[in-house]
Image (tube, rainbow, N blue to C red; front, side, top):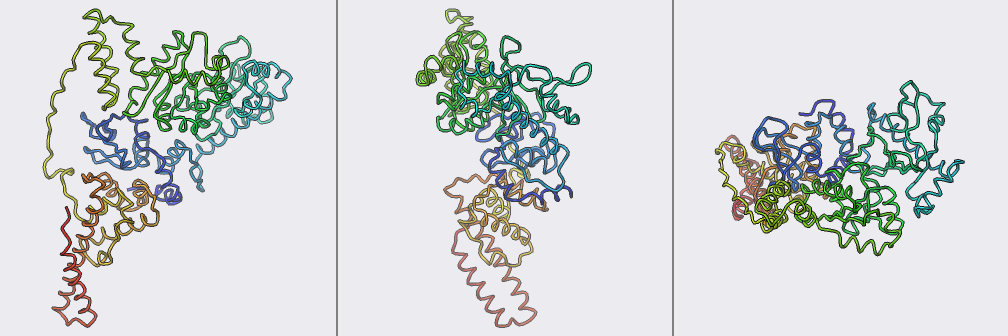
Length: 593
């Protein structure tokens, strides 16, 4: 049961916001970021984080948007997982999920210190961004920065669109700007704008650089990237990791490129800010850039949510090839059937910025169309390190390729890749040993047959649209001691689903977080009824009919028991007659499957 504090907090967060949040959240992505999952049929599996086990029994259902452990019976929504796994309270879990999908969690009357600091840091980097932009327009040394941008073919209009700024040379330009707010210096350090001097005091982290603001998925500025003016080092400098900026999670320009990626059907991943800006200026607006790190699983998950194809663009030199191979290794585990990845290697000495300036957008788009598919890049690279003319060379190919192909989720793509390896190497796959099936006893939870009321609640929780397909008969609410609590719960769920026709299954369960029934509903939400859409409605309708029969029989027994003690009045007789008639009508309907 949720504790008293959580009940207070959950009651202060609007239910409609929870509905909206859980409609946007993908529980597979939420859990996979914290607990690596492996595809298993239609679901995903892992070793349960809530108890020790050798064989994975922790299952996450993308269709139901619930998790469940068949070992320890842990189950719930994405919110419950964060509460249990990350030891968060209800509000903290909601806020973390909201941030991940670009929503602002409603404020309550008891803001946490962490929330207050986050707001301060966001305000600081936003103010700093305005200061950097002002320096590009007005600083006496900005002419060199403007000349550099013009040299790269960046117009004033596109510079304004990307909010490009300028950090003048010197160690204390920004420091002196906030000199009258000394209490703010530690926060500027935490925001990544200032650094501590060894002998005390502070100095500007960004100096003599073109400044590119970095936004999170919600479009908020969270960090900066700076390109050196002149020959200094490092050439590119990013903000350090901060409470509001995590390099492995963010992609430069993703918040602007979302629509273009979805429209074009692919995302273009490049290495530099100026590459993104130059491509966008010439009409290629579906590009993003990594922030000084290799492509991560977080990056790929975000990109695949927008389009099923990712194209990596690298320089054609050795470093570019190595970066391409790292990207390939990262993406293999995400290559479920239907997804594609390609690798575009540019002529040596060229980057997307320089090449598109020379050849134009149309020619660049044609190059993208000829990008090397992932299978070709993988096998071509491996073949450079082996010799198919030698038996041991073919054996080596099989040995080094199998671990890579083993990362690909089960499905047609993996099967075809394994077929290609067998064709190249001549080494056949070893047949899998048949798994020994251990059947659980009839007393196990998985084989326990639900009662009709539990079945009805489970079906309705999993499929809220059933409320509009099948009405609850009035007789179902007649007094029945065995099902009275369950009927009340079913009625509540039915009414909520009718009032909110677009509500999701997890959101429907979350409506009962503060109730005694919450844990039971979480378990019923993951129950497998082995039904398809063609017989779901009929099965639910028959289950409701069974409940009505039970209610009618119980009401008849109550009236007959009363008649043995006292004579029924006309109203009682009419009621009994009506119940008999209804029972006969119900008997004409077939029993549940």
